Amino acid sequence: MSDRAGLDFPRPLTTVDVVIFAIKSDALQVLLVQRPDTESEPFPGAWALPGGFVDIAGDRDLEACAVRKLKDKTGVVSPYLEQLGSWGSAARDPRGWSATHAYFALLGEHAAGGALAADAQWFTIGGEKVKPKLAFDHAEILQAAIQRLRAKVEYTSLPAYLMPPEFTLPELQRSFEIVLGRPLEKSAFRTRMLTADLIEPIAKMRKGPNRPAQLYRLKKAKAPVFFARTFNPPE
Image 1 (cartoon, rainbow, N blue to C red):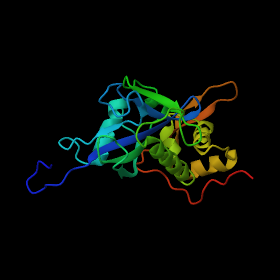
Image 2: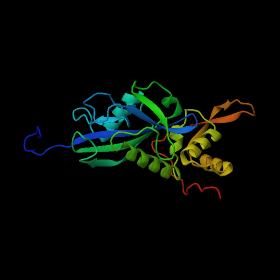
Image 3: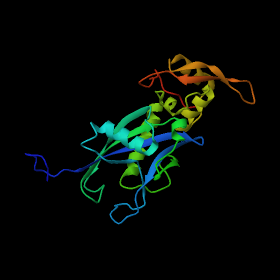
């Protein structure tokens, strides 16, 4: 029953879950948390997306709840957070009728390499899933997030948010290729990035076995760049 006067209908369980992506070890990875192994837990010891119940006293809105959950597990705030969708039914949580509002977030390599919560761990994505069986309907939510990310990478600069503060153009191209799962033509990619008002060179070079490579950084932008056309797959 409601604790507010005039509201006498049952309230569903309301949660927010966050699909947190990063590129680690040259692969697209997602952050999962292991649920407590207790009798009161509906999926004891299972892996799940980071999330939890909305704090109606502290969370001003759903996004604030997502930001809080992300920071609880990673200690950082994501440079990119987007609402993915909502899932709800009487069957998704054995504790009762439940609805969750899912977001996906992108973390740069430097942030993803920081200290995590004790119950959190990175898992490599293969296709549209991970190896562990996920609690609730989180496998479905993860699949939807991967599909959304890959679709948007075809025409936006989202992989730039997966980069460290300083990077070379080949490193940026590799991040696009990892997310898309296919190679991109070097000259066309370079032209697109340099004309998109997305990155800017810095007064540093990356030394390596060959000639030094120019380092770049992401321009201060609140939104990703949208490209006029998609990346064409190789013929």
